[in-house]
Length: 327
View 1 (cartoon, helix red, strand yellow):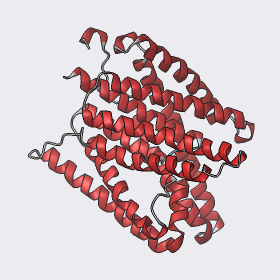
View 2 (tube, one colour):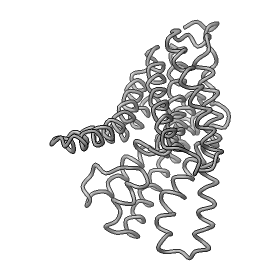
View 3 (tube, helix red, strand yellow):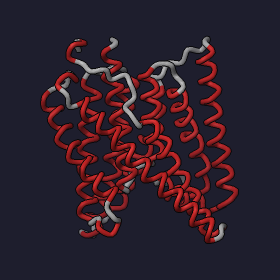
């Protein structure tokens, strides 16, 4: 890739950090604290929590849409160096998805038809496929390539599991549940492994003060997730599987071992914090992408979380192109 045909993919798109922080707040407020507060808190406190959660969700969607516009524009540009078919596909699906998602964000919820939600989900998965292929086109680093493939497996395994359940159940196929679980659990494992694989592309200068600070912050993030999971387990007891499924759609482990999800989630957040703490702009972009993917959860079915997922994949594709330019 020659410099005269390549845009500057190193910089993080505008409002990406706002999207990441708002998506994390959306996860904590709407999918963790709200279910807990429904039975523990009074009506007034619950109403304030719901208001804060709605603000965080709307902020994450609006900022993610703005950042996604910049990603689609750069990746579909002729200066990106991608093949015409790839650029045309990203432009076609991206510039159709963004207006639909924007309309769904600002219209009242009662006016959003189910057919529009299905259309958006189909467009989002098609765009994820094209973004992953764009990120793999220049073969930047093996770690990032493996992470992109795992992200693609996680995205499509979730929707394949849903399709098998729907159509197999209607046909009364005896292997419906087994095949659906196979798709779902393989995708969940890919979702949990993707941040760890992508993290190998983040080089930390061990001897510099910034590298030491990044390690301390990453370790603190892992400890924070582990402590939070332990407190969550202590609060809800045997209902932890239901709460964790509602928050991040994870259900692979047996019910008695759900606390072990603290390990991959803690490591994933640690990798994200290490990337965000890096002085390299591309590594910061990778850290932001991991934060977005973790905050959206596995196989999200809500439009707001789906937009956050698409933005995370777009950032990984941009990072792959940026790293390939340095080789």
